[in-house]
Length: 314
View 1: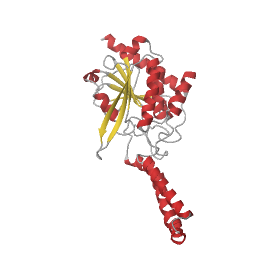
View 2: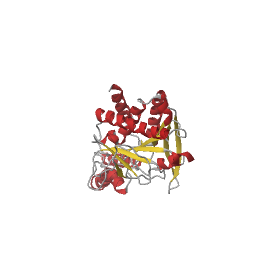
View 3: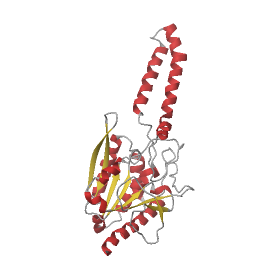
View 4: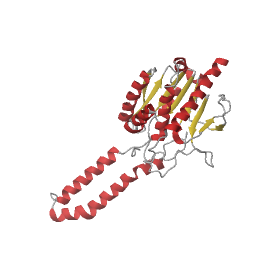
């Protein structure tokens, strides 16, 4: 339990925000050192996506183990999203970025901008006209304007969410917890991928697809916010031929061309067949149950062993 508490401190608190490139690189450096100690080699890859504004956006994937030799690859996204202040629901395995989410995130900046305009127009400017620019009102006007532009520049991509315990640090911690339980033979057969862009355009998935031609022949498990509830939920697309005994699969798919995969999350399915990630992308996503993580880690271990043993049975 102490190991799990250390993981929660490290990846939910210290490196719990993975929004900017600097934060992502710091996280990948730390987790790479930890995984190497657990017997896995880590290959971090950078891809540059050209934007319409002629700028480039960097995406970083971490490939853990030998993907080409592995029979099973377990994947989750590690980046964190913008704060929507609990005004918008987030669903497991659904595209994360939307204009509404972005607008909700920058709403405080818009309010600050309006407040600055009102303050300057009704307070500072009238005083500047009577007392001159080199006055308390003049200095106040300069400070408020500089601060406004600072916040606009700093949060132009949205205000990043600070607390990301369940979404999606819980999946990262479960993967590390799982690796601790694998033997040497299993580590050769099971690889992992932490991909970027899970909270935006899923670009890390496209990087994975192009990793090598062998990816289409591999078995995949995608996990999302696995600490969301007590009971695991299993989904898979119609074309997937992966089978597990005593497991009920719901219909689901991801934005990927990979054919054979299953999806695992936890929580409750609503009336529309979607799984809501409770308190995701808000300050309330600040708790993770040790018992739930250990329970789901054991289930994931059994499922992984079943999938790699089915290859040996053929």
